Image (cartoon, rainbow, N blue to C red; front, side, top):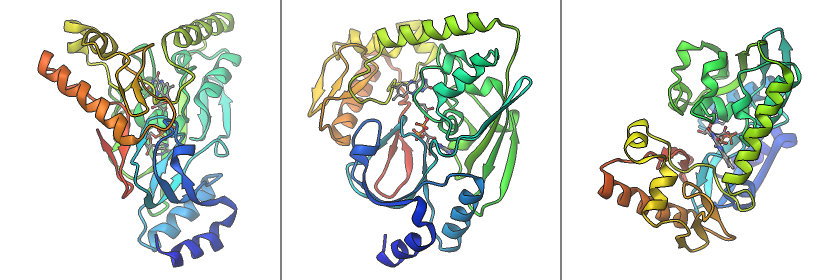
Length: 314
Ligand SMILES: Cc1cc2nc3c(=O)[nH]c(=O)nc-3n(C[C@H](O)[C@H](O)[C@H](O)COP(=O)(O)OP(=O)(O)OC[C@H]3O[C@@H](n4cnc5c(N)ncnc54)[C@H](O)[C@@H]3O)c2cc1C
């Protein structure tokens, strides 16, 4: 990005901007080149100001949350990144509805629901992302997605206009939503939960989910959660992705400092200084072999962020 723009951005947004950020430090997988500029709006009004300024200057930003579903390219990223983080995370409970800003940490949201005896999002209690990212990805666990309890989603488009989507308009399907295809930023989410469960039962279920995740998933080395999405047809024929990858003998396979986890074969961990290209190598070798052996084309859950700031499927 040219230095004139950087100077202007620094003048206008100096409190919420950072330059030359190493993505290998910031990202969850601990890979990636440098980001020229990251702006972190703290509320809706600040975000509207940022969007309008970028639009007037012809700049199309890359939107990120906590980066738990993103694989950054090893090359530097020269576009403006707008990060929606925990400073953008007000939340209110009104009866059965929770209204939350997008930066709220997903486990905190699940805990709040439990504390207020609201049921329906127990399954998200161990997902380490932001609510915005979770809604965009229709994330969840135990074959559930957050979309099933979303009442509405409010977004800000590239010119700073606020839009509101009802649940059907969000077009939620397994790990998919309409927001993956556009450039709108989720700024508010309304959730409709149920009060038909005892708080103690909700708590016990969440503790059990967390215990099971701790036992099954690698926790110490950086990773991006499950690499491949579970496909129902393939599940019926061969089981979940981790089982197939393990059966093919890939558990523990390394490329550079990236490794198919010894603990769970559907995770790729960074053992230290892995590169994005090492992770992509492992993903591709698994994909290709699974396709040749089973005829199924496995879909990768994480998205690749290219050096020109595009988010693409792997
Ligand atoms: C250890 C680990 C375990 C995981 N377990 C699970 C799991 O059980 N289930 C599951 O579904 N996922 C899981 N994930 C993946 C990930 O946590 C979820 O997809 C998550 O909710 C993404 O949130 P994020 O804030 O990290 O989004 P990011 O990874 O930063 O972004 C994901 C996508 O959302 C977009 N985005 C983010 N915020 C906004 C916003 N406010 N407005 C518009 N677009 C936005 C980005 O542009 C990007 O396309 C796991 C990841 C890790 C590292």
